[in-house]
Image (cartoon, rainbow, N blue to C red; front, side, top):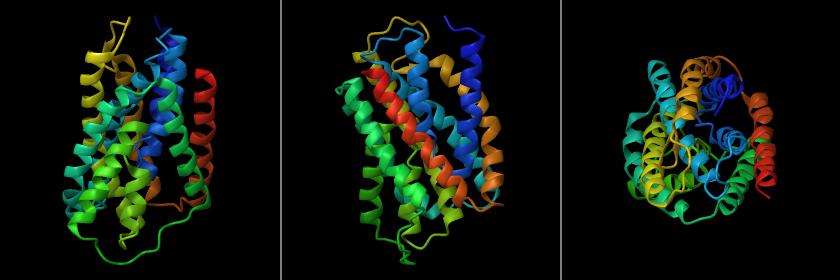
Length: 268
């Protein structure tokens, strides 16, 4: 059973993730998954399913966090709803189907996949390279295919798609702040679709001893982390619209990189 220390860790994690979500238009899975895995291991979770549970729980948390960011970004008129409508359908399909694939992979394999994409994301964010702006909107076919790919990868590594959606939109000439706002809008239904997939698959394949689980979703973490994240996300949005975030991005890029290494180390 968890004590006040575990409760505090969940809430503090939520505050940090919420702020990061609002600031960068990402869901925060790169932070949630490795830290949550460590906490669950301290609660004697089955190592065979601990990463699956961290991924599913992270998706559920991000569905809530991203919705809070969506509301704040909409108030700033930073969401391009036409782009949202083109990308969202395939994102949901890709995310949901990919959550079924994750069930058949071991915790260590998922950790390797997660760490690889976090490493690539960290390098990209640190050096701040943005795709060349083409100042034109891609055809619907490209939007649909890209959305399916983004959704599939996002479910495997439990991110709300921001690390892929933002550069994809910028490559079409979308202003970076509107790209972040639109990414936040897409992130909520993307994460919800993934969470539902992990919940369904957890019922079928999970081996749980805890009564606080719903499939691969760990309910106490969803509640406590979400409380902190919903509170902090609007502050991240405010900062993103007032300050240059280049230095902050470079600082933040180191966090998922080192946490991913720790995740693999803890599972050896």
